Length: 281
Length: 279
Image (cartoon, rainbow over the protein chains, first blue to last red):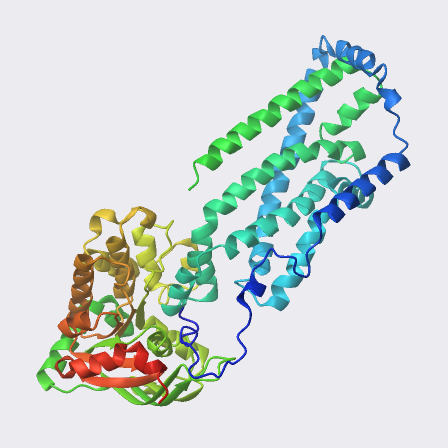
C-alpha cells in the first residue's frame, strides 16, 4: 500500500460510456487459450500408443519372470559377509563423497542463491544466474560424473566434483527461493538504520531464512548419498563400483550384503535428517 | 568527541532537551521547499509540498486518509525516497542523492513501521542490536561482533521499553504490543535525532495504542528528539501530539496546533464524498 499511495483513489470524473460486460472477465468459460479436455485426452493416448508400439513391448516376456526372480532372490541368501570390510570401506567413501559434496555445494549455493534471488539483485544479474543453475541441475549426474572422470581420472575426487556441481544446481535454486520468500520489511528497516548491503543480507535476509537453508541442505545431503551410488558405475568412487562388479559377475550373495548395508544407511540418514529438520523452526 | 557523544547518547540528548526548553526557540530540523514526489508511471504527484518546517524536539502527528501521501512524506524524510523536485534540508544540510550522506542521515533517523518490520526468528537483543548497524564495524558486525557501546545502548533501549526479561527470547513468541516495543527499542538504540513512525499503532488494541504512544512521546521528550508520527485517529493525534499536519490528495490540508483542528477541518480531511464530487 505504501508504494503507490494514489492507487487506492478512484480516478475522478472519468467519462466511461462503454461499460465492459462483467461476465466476459469471469475465468473458466469457453474463452480463448483453453484446450478442450477431450482433445488433451486424445493427445495423451496417442502419444502413449505410439511409444508403446515403437518400443516393441512384448507382454509375453512376463512369462517366466517369476521363476527368474525367485532364482535371483534365492541367490541373495545367505548374504556373503566376507565382503563386509570392502562394503564398509566403500560405503564410508560414498558417505564422505556425499558429505564433502554437500558442504561444498552449500558454500557455492549461498553465493549463487544470493545472486539468483530476484529481490536482492537486478534482473540482468539474477536471471542469467537462474539459467546457469537450471542448466547445472538439468544435466544428469551420471553425465557430469563421466565428464569429471574424463577430465581428472578415476577416483573419489571426480565423484566429489560431480556431486558438488549437480547439487549446487538444485541447492542454489532452493536458497534463492528462500531469500525470495523472506519478508521485505526487515530489509527495509535495516536500510533505514543505515546498514550496508552486506549487513542487510546478514541481519535482514540470512537471519530470516537460515533455518530454511539448513533444512534444504539436509534434504540435499540425503539426495547426495542416494545419488552418489551411481558414481561408482563410471568409476567416480564409492560403493556403486562394487554393486555393478558383483552383479555383473552373478555374485548375488555379495550383492545382498551391499544392498542391505545401503538400505540401512539410506533409512538411517533419512531418519537423522528428518529428526534434525523437525527441530528447525 | 563523536565517540564520546555516541557512548553517552542518552545524557547528551537530555542536555539538549533542557537547552531547548530554556531558550524557547530551536533550530529547524526539517525544512521542505517546493518538494514534489512523482512515482514512475503515475500522472499525478504522490506529494506536493510548498513549504514545511519542523523544529527540533517537536512532536508532530501526521493525519489524513490512506493514500493521501503520509507514507510518501515519511519516506522522503528518512531518505529512502528522493523527491522528483524541490529541496529537503535536514539540520541545515540539503539531503542530496549522495549515498554516504544518505546513509549518515538514515542512521541518525529512526523509522518505526506499521508491521513492526522485525526479524521474527531472531531474539529481541539481535533485533535491537540491528539498530546499531550503521555504527558497527562494517565487516566484524557480519560475524555478530558489536562494540561494547553498541551493546550498552541496545540494552539501555530494551530497558527503556521494559523488555529486559525477554532479551533472549525470539520475537515470534512475543505479543503484538511487545513486538512494537522491540521495534521502538531498535530505533532508540540508534540514539536518533529524528524519529519517524508510520502508523505504529494501527495493529494494536486501544489500551496498547495509548501505552505505545505514551512510550514513544516520552522517549522523544527525554532525548529532545523530534517525532513525526502518522496516525489514523485524529482524536488520538490531538490528545498526545502538540502539532497536527493533515495530508490529503498529495497536499498539506492543515498544519497547526492540535487545539486549532476544528470539526470543520476534520470533516474536510476525512470526507470521501467531497473528494469524488467534481470541483
